[in-house]
Image (tube, rainbow, N blue to C red; front, side, top):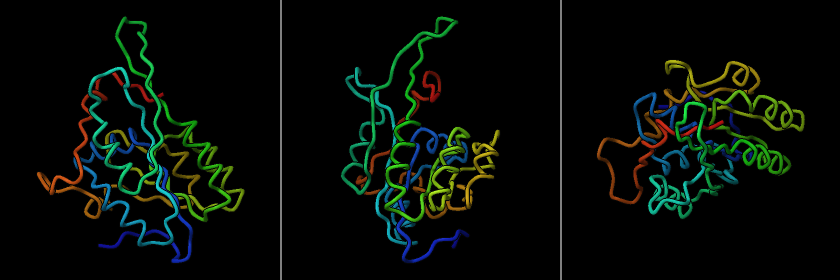
Length: 202
């Protein structure tokens, strides 16, 4: 199955993956991502220069649910950008974990803008609209990957409008998903259940 997007064979491409946002989008569409397949799909579309993956880690735990995936990605073609989460208590006295990676992602896009032709942003966060606008003015083309088919939609309308093109995550699910119980053990699953109740990406 082919999915519609405008890439050119000689284009220098970089992927910028907002880990928690992509995880939430895939979960809303009820599938797990095979990150090797994802890399292969976009590597086939041009000259893939770099694939960045951004996530916050709970460092004070003996075991972080996302650590096996982070380690696997680090050894298998992804550039990992991580930082420790911060714990706080909200107004209702509930323990919350804060781990926003927007600044790190924005800085990397700006730094890479002169060395690539096409940025692929895996996020629906409307806060990135201004970033996309700025790098477009530098000559960069930007594709955003997210979903409008979740309830509510994961993609902010202003970000979708700003992007040069939009890829519906559900349309490429067949290309990048892991089959249930699939695998040879080479890629760990992602146990991000802790994100449900106490993780704030803001």
